[in-house]
Length: 558
Image (cartoon, rainbow, N blue to C red; front, side):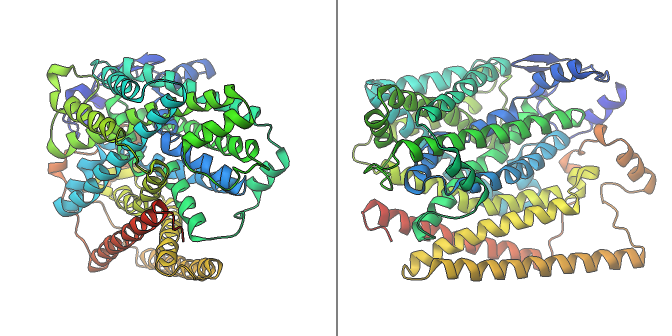
């Protein structure tokens, strides 16, 4: 025990609220519990106590924007985009496993790590994007709350205000366990989408074909690419990285519980994709053969359509699913923002703290909720376009967030023996490349609507494959050169061979030292050029997205 405390005391963790017993919604693990888990029952009880961050962050992805985006995919394209969800399972697991390692090993939030390791310029760039995107995402959550309550006959002003009070009240209790129990209740309600899917009478032939055969009903167009980016953005969103890294720290998890939290994340990934597939099937089969096929407007029109073609119960059930998804999404995304705010400005930020002990943390949370709730009550706003555009924006910003994540996970000063394996870097590079490709396709088709999208995608895919193969060849050549020369690059945080051996042999006790003790990373000219190129890409892609969204809002879809 003393050995673990020594590592812990010399770590980067600053907030005492992040130390002590693990008090989860479904159990407790004492801080001094170092007993081996023998037998399935002991492991299951431990998993139940530890799980939560991974499940909540994933189900939080099936939020208002997710429900709307998946419903649009089913209504406009049937089950032809189902394969994309299957592709996103490893993307979800790879990205979130990396932030799990960062959180458990460093004890430091994602925003703070970016500022410390990349400097104020890139920190402001990354976290600034997060704040803007999160705020817009929370607005879409309240759009979902408003539309669902209107369908259920509740006055939108009263309903939206009540939802805002519920969100704030469930968060400022000063108890991590009570907050997690509230989130678990919302997670359970998420499964109402399963009986709703069966009410639409799905046919398993189209489901199997859509799952196994990549394609797009009607072919690739700028609109279908926009929706595909939206699906990626709502399923693998940048806010997830910041939320889960801070939430595992707030839950007081350490590297000892690494495998349990990985299992939590994998379970959440499967749950979120099942929910997304169910939502696609609801509109795909309920509206099949009707005038509504291919004419998605917004979630309100979906609820009205279900009531008309399936029954009032189906419309009401979809409204409840949307309301629940909006609340869990708003809770998770707002908390992600509050965690990042605390990281950047050095304020106390923990759900273990009472209101009187973390006013700044809770004030930021309450202010974001209140302002977002007020915005959605503005009349005549194009709610459907806003929702899809925000999800697409998340997809466009995801490559930059993943690049920062990759750099942090290859920083030996930060992760020591927990740095990425080469295969993981290769997989992550492919993910970033595909996301950038989709964004560039959107940009080109927005500038040049007459372009043949299929030829464009084929050409860009060939270029991407060439770049990735070239990068792999360079990496292998460098690795071979290091082996021949016998040069092994030692971490600046590990000064001797004995220390490095001890570090590798005791991975589950190793924690990142205080950030002030780490040497500043040196950026090569190639890395600087790459980061500047990334920024230019983001500016171009965001401008194109805004143009596309305005065109759709004005009824002039390209």
